[in-house]
Length: 611
Image (cartoon, helix red, strand yellow):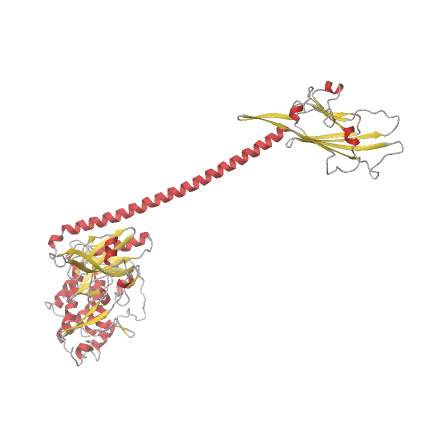
C-alpha cells in the first residue's frame, strides 16, 4: 500500500503521509507447555523481508530512529506485558485462553503512532497504552507491506490515502484562494464604479455651470452694445458681481439686512460700492439682493435663469432696474435697485394716503411699463403674469415701477388684432402669437377668467390684472370686498338703481371726505374707473391694448364706453378661491414703514424689496 507521497509545490517539496487504523483480534493461551512466539505489527518493503529477522521494534530498547532495511515494527507482546488485565475483564477459560483486541493508529498529519489494547468485546480505550512520534516517510518506502507476525482471529485496516488527502487539501486551498480573489476583484470594481460615477457627476455639473455662465456673459455683452442708446440716468447695464462683493454689500448676509423672505429665498438690503468721487469720498448705492435658496441644483438655476432672462433685456423708467447678478460656487443672486418707498399696496391699504395726482400718475407709469414689455421690445413680447399692487414699487419721487419678473414669460412673438372703436385687441391663444401656453400662475383675484380656465397667458390677461390694479388705486379697496370681487363691486355701483347712480361713489373715501386730503378730479376718476372696467371685461377681445390704455390716460382718446345696460357679472371671481395653482412660489414681501412729512404731502419711506 502507498503510505506517503511526495508533492512538489513551487520551490518546496512536501511529503504527504497516509493515515490508517488497523484492528487485530488474537488469542493468548496461558499454559506451561505453550511456546512463546513473536507478536508484532510490522511494515516492510517487500514480502521477502517479512521472512527474515524482525526489524527493531519501536517500543523496545534496541529501537533506532532509522532502519537500514526500511521497515518498522511494534512489539505487541511488550505492550501486553504492561496491560493491566483486571479480573473483571479476564475472560480466560479453564485452559487459560484469553482473547484480546489491539488497535494501532497512525496519524499522518500529526506524525504519531498509537496503540490501544483491551479484552475482546470491550470498547476501544480512550487513552493509548503506547504512543510515539513517528514520521513514516523517514522509516519506510512510500509503498510497503503492512501486517502482523503471529496468528490472529481477525484483522481489518482503514487507510486515508495520501493522494486523496492531498487532492482535497489542494482543492480546498484553491477554492479558498479563488473566493478571496473574487472578493477582492468585486471590491475593486465597486469602488471603481463609484469613482467613475463621481467624476462623471462633477464633470456634468461643471459643464452645466459653465454653460449657464456663458449664457449670462453673452447677455451682458449684448446689453453693453446698446448702452449708448439708453438714458444715462436710468440705464445701468447689469454687471457680473462676485459672491464676496455681495457678501460685503449685505454685511455677510446679516439677518439685520433682511427685507423679505419667500419661496425663492431671501431678499437683503445692501450698499454696493461704486468707487470714489473727485474728493476721494466713497460712493455707495443702495440695492436689494435677491438670494435664491438651494432647492436642488437644477431647479435653483432654472428659477434664476427664468427671471434674469426676462428682466435683463428690459430698460425702461417704469421697470425696476436689474443692477447685477452673481453665479458662483452654486450661489445665484440677482441685485436690483433699491426702491425707497416700497410697494403700492402699503400706501393704498395700510398706513398711508396718496393724493389724487400721485395716484393718477402711478396708473400712467405702470401703463407705460406694461406697454413697453408688450409692444415696444424689438422682437419679442414679455408677459408679466403677476401684475398686482404689491408688485408695483415706488421710487424716491413716488414714481410707479413694475417689478418682480419671477413669473414672467419672454420670447413670445406679438400678434394683436384691432377691433371696432380702436381700443380693443384680440391676442390669439397659441404659442408664438402673443401668448404662453402653460399652467395658470399668479395671484388669486388678478388672474383673468380665460387664463385661469385654459392656462394660456396672453397680453390680454396682463391687461386684465392691470385693470384690477386701476380699480384698487381709485377705490382704495383690496381685490376682494368681503366676499365680492372688486370688479363686481364697482359694476354694482355703476348699475345700481338702473344705472342712474353716480359711479363716483366708488372713489376712495379718503379722497371724498372732509379733511386735509379732500379733493380729486372727478372727470379723471370716472375715466379711470371706466378704463378699469374695460380692462377687466370677461371677454379678452373687448379689452383695450396697452397702446390705447396710454391714450385714454393721456386723454387723447375718450373714456371707454362700458354701456348703459348691466354687464354680465364676472362669476369666475370667488373670494373663497384663496389659492391658484402655480408653477412657481410666493414672492418676497416685507415692509418697515416710517413717515416723513414734506409740505402738503405725506411721503412714506417703506423699506420694501419686492423683486
